[in-house]
Length: 597
Image 1: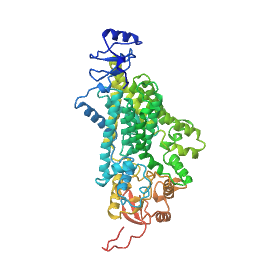
Image 2 (image 1 turned 120 degrees about the horizontal axis):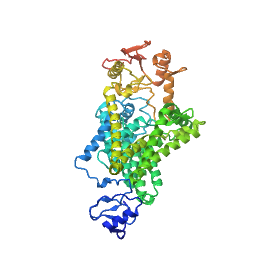
Image 3 (image 1 turned 45 degrees about the vertical axis):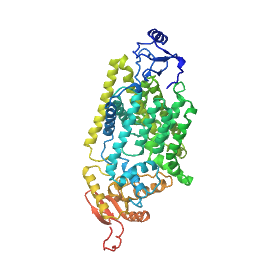
Image 4 (image 1 turned 120 degrees about the vertical axis):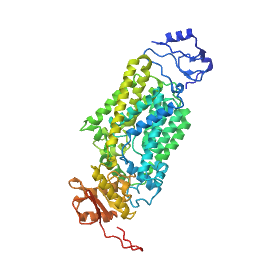
């Protein structure tokens, strides 16, 4: 809040109000204020001594004065109801069948963090942890409930945290009741349909969902000019997910530098304590990330970065893959992201109030970060080994989320701005936003209700019958094989550990996070699944003797592959879709006379 000395204030009479109105260029009709209202001599915001509410000077012509959230009163049921509706929107958007794409990897890591005996010997689970805070904070639930139950609970909690934070942010930018619900639906619509690099904020259970909740809470504090609280919340987001929170911190710093004419912009010295605390919180997330490559041979680190950027994650990290095509704009991704950028720019340029200006500065910071990533890619396109270590930092992650958020809130900001001056136009925009939001949520609910195969299983099973066969095979493995057994499985079998609770040599989805483990993981994939003609469609295409050799090298005793053609190994279960083979003779009987398969 702008600090104004007492002698600079004076009571406002009708005559003074008329003079103040004439002094403002193009001043429009005044709104009635309760008695005791004060203005500063320069017409800035000040506090009303009589009521404690925030007062505003007369508004320019054609722009209606918004009601600040501090003076917007909810009844005892309206605020929780609005947050509940936003939560329902987010749940409807993220309501895919369990497990979602990344849930098998994240929750398996979280379970192993608390129980190192689970799936003992699995290469991916034994690799370094990049999200130790999330595993410590959330992983203990896997010791109490099953993985599907933890996934469902995690989605409910994550969407709840995001809903509360989003509602607080939306009410700062567009202080009208129920608009937060529309902006939430528009946000997930823009984020899922107009993204650039595949980043999302509302989805399955993983650390970045909680981190984005803290980012939205930090932005809500920032647009209220509570910079110290914003730094602390963004530092906490960095502790949970180093890249989500770290890029948000940098974008907030960009916004602070950009908003030099903001009268409520604090001095740097006034923020030092909060920034120091934010830095300490951020170190909780930064330190484990730094340790992932500390003490590793530089040549191995360079190879790991090359694999990350150009082989495993080009759809997130390399703009030459998703944004450009042969030097030209990639229409499916680049054009739609540019269209969203143009929409946001068109809307935000006519929203001069301080909350929208502060949020716009953060969005601009996110786009500037993405621009730096694009420049790195373009300048180093002829020397990819040099650019790989830089491109691995997900330069486009924040832009994929903050731009849809800014565009959605700009739409509701226009509805609020035109509410008094242009009611017909405001009503038209309200209707368009509501229809678009309802269409997206309805489309998602329809897809979720008709889908019968979880997203994580769609690479393994294309039909309901194949999915049933896959689960039957995994259940049988869980019953008859020892807990520390290691399996060779199909390259895209992302849910093997989820159902079978057994370790595996390696799959495409389970790329380790530490630099020392990435090259061996990639070597395993190439050994098992790569032929001179490309990636094998099935392990049945590999020579049986080669499979035995690889199983011996990687400590695997079993093979899971397609049911046909038959392989010259001992089957332990086989159905219409899949077969499980024992590659080596069973172990000798134990003291009770039982033989382990």
